[in-house]
Image (cartoon, rainbow, N blue to C red; front, side):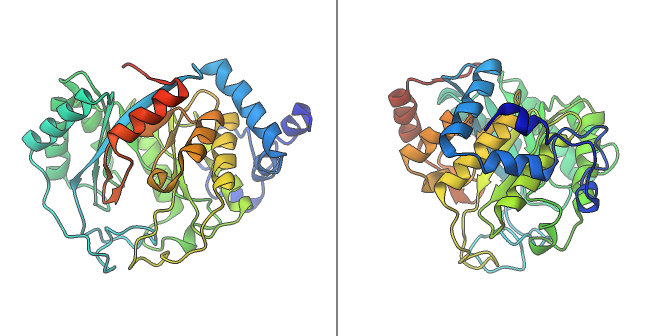
Length: 338
């Protein structure tokens, strides 16, 4: 397949359903069909193309290490079908009050000692209240003082909240699109796709970097995955950080028992993200614990250059630090310094 056959698919016009998710985009570089053309390429050709793009913009043997901590766990009023923290599901996740600033700083210092350069703070809120913003702002400032990059994922933001977080020193705000606009209603009913785009717009206007990706393996089609990547790539600008999550099935959630995604399809998704968002940090996020070293290595080959590092992602497991270090050593890869 020739490169120009893909470029010819770059969008000039859009279908109505695609426009639903692109109201904050000033220009459109990719549409679903052109991304699906990428995903449909012979595997070797797609990986080769992704590697070419990756090497043009990044050190092919460097990976950025992030650590994620849940600063407030459980009790979320949303009905996201994948999430064990939703109050309406019985998943065994216990509600926990917001951590103290001291506990967060201790965890951040330990993460830095183990090689992490970015510290992400997540909270199970539909959206933070003003008192929540104030305590998280204290956490951000304290972690920033350690010399680490800071990231927060707190749900939907109200006007002015993003600026407050930015003033505290927040480097990245994570707010995932989760899936394509066409499939969104099958996963979540308590908020609209545009709500997510509105929060991302506020983050941009506050001068904070955007961390935004999605989840695959939720019973979607390849076309749906293409739609997700197109939505991300057409944000203007596209996100600086793009986490690609593989669904971690938790008993008690509606998506428990969903047919598992073929690992090579996940690798294809990573490659498509790399090609369409060449300068972004593409992160292997949730689900990495279930991946073999071989699959993770293929993801790095496909253009992933960031991982969550540590033993836990909010409420689900993650490979141990020693395992990660051993794999990176096998591959001759090094961690990216701040």
